[in-house]
Image 1 (cartoon, one colour):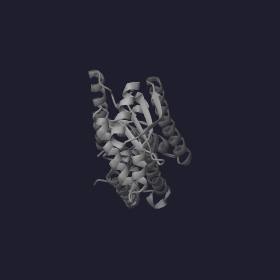
Image 2 (cartoon, helix red, strand yellow):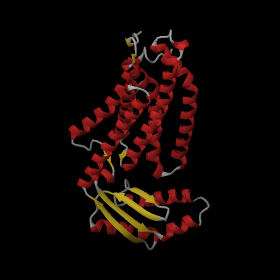
Image 3 (cartoon, one colour):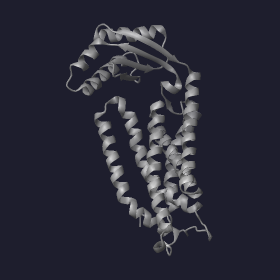
Image 4 (tube, helix red, strand yellow):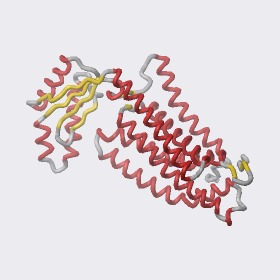
Length: 315
């Protein structure tokens, strides 16, 4: 039976391990070949950021019945124009104030002037409001801070779960959130997704979603362990029963979230694609881990207060 997750824990661990190994193995191969390990964006790798005012875009958005559609079309037009300058992979955004932001690799003053001239050809008169340069050292500092943020969040989640439940639950939560972060990083490696501050925000959102789902399951496990009618069941069977009782809630929640994220991917435009794709994968991984990873890990660390270890036998 599929929900016999504790007895079949090695299967779930193997599936996760192979996927994570594939992504990190690809990182190692790139390192050996001298290629970038991950597709770091301007925030982490350094580069240039241009803020411009383009009256033609502002006017088109202001008069449109569907501003988001016009914004998507204009970004596509700009990307085509920048492609002629070998800058098609730039991050292009239109702010709420209808200001254009272009983040790309480090540019010289002449290259910035070429972008300005190219957009003048497309839109007529444009104005450069600001040019910022993010150096490699600043990018490295941002990467380091992002790693510490993810580690700090994982540690705080473990402390919270340990305080609310006990140590076994806390360890399971910590290892599960670590699993989720590694699985998302592996996914980004395999698809060579851009790694920037938005990606870090996606990971933190995934960890929050995963731990919320895990808490619901843990709460039911604890309740069933303390229920007299469950006293005759083994820990593995108690966990299975708890998963059955929470499965309807889990399915309904993940289905709703996936529908929203698919809508963002289809209708959200280029700006939302990366964030939405990472979140979609993260929600799938978070749901999987809260069922198939967190529970077996909890079973491993759980000790009955009066009897010591209660580890399920493998079948």
